[in-house]
Length: 255
Ligand code: MG
Image 1 (cartoon, helix red, strand yellow):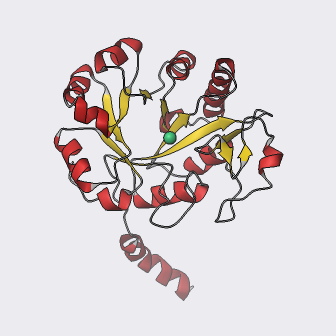
Image 2 (cartoon, protein in one colour):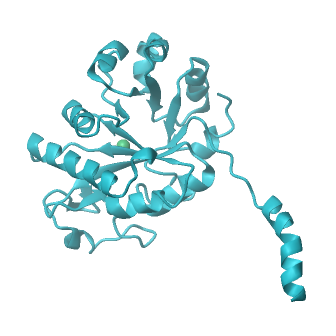
């Protein structure tokens, strides 16, 4: 009984002592937060680290396998095994350096839904087989997000305009940003996009696009910025988000 009373008396102190993670307003961890800790990119561990750091978002890349399983990886092959023409079971023969198997989209989203801080920034990689495969993959991705009731935590990306438009067709509230760099904010607005997510060299060439995007109600994001000077300049120009491999380095910059 004494122990119980002591626990109740100490509870407020314990709550106060718990470290509070400050959520960044602008940092998106590119393929999760992996670099500083030596974690594999696009792993569950890199997602957990992005959440631990308080990133606004954790970005990750989705592919579809021959047996329609959706998996998280950047390249079209996983440790030497081609993703699109292999089955999930075949991929399980290889492991990330931290012992993880390749995450499925389902496992990744479920992990992301265990918290309420960091957004899940989902990029669909275009199929190397066909445009039709890209569209089918997009429909399956959007269905899985719906089935898991993850919509509120999602933002979407693609270099592929047909994928971007399919995402918006399937889910008209989907926040989709375009990655490829050649469309002006006005074009993106007229096509229904949520934002422009461009390499920083595009914003160096078109610094006015950040303000134009803002005026149109679009969000601007720049990748992959691993340099304080470039990040500071983008923030000075009022970019909304920065996607980086170095979230720890940029975390203290002021927006
Ligand atoms: Mg990506």
